[in-house]
Image (cartoon, rainbow, N blue to C red):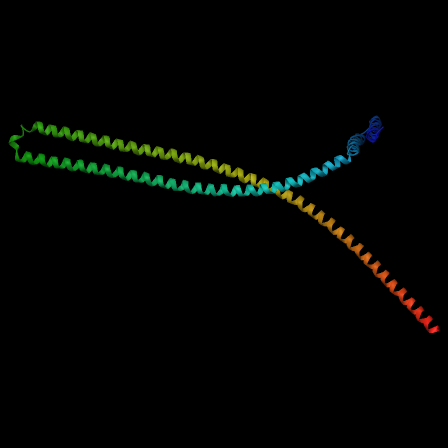
Length: 284
């Protein structure tokens, strides 16, 4: 039987033991505390089985997963920076579009005002011209009536023709007025459609901007959490480095003290030998 099989048998025995304890607890169940005890035993059984089944390979896999999470954190930081740059670009584009839209609206309004002024000017000129023509015709007619009262019967046909001509001119003026009015209405309708389309586009861009701001806030929250984890890991690493440095310093101090003691002891021995040699030379 190999090591894995023995390990699996030990796990199964522990699980069976906990199951037997749970059965006995159920057999003596009389009150609510025993129910709580049975639930705790079930949870304890699951926890013990999970801990016993955790192998060094699984622990190594957890460490690899932690390392990959750190790499993902670095990539997430880079992605957040890229998103910030993109957000700034989108904001600048949105501001440019807003300025262009305001400029277009002002331009359309100025064009509409110019069209209105031109139409009113043309209508006024034509009305004035027709009035002048009618006044001139009436003056001429009255002058002819005053000068040629005797020839009234002969000029009745001409007067009728002049009246018909004036009527036709009035009809033409009315048609021109209607055409100008229709053109003005069409221009107003086109202006309303353009303004509506631009307003809808502005709402879409505003909604998109709100979504981007919401994503940026979520990324900032995630970045803050990752920063907290990074600070914790950095503090743990600094503590480990400090501990190793202190241990190395203590070891260096011990070695240096030992060297000093050895050097002092050798110098002491050498002085003793010199004293002995001096005594021997004096005796001789």
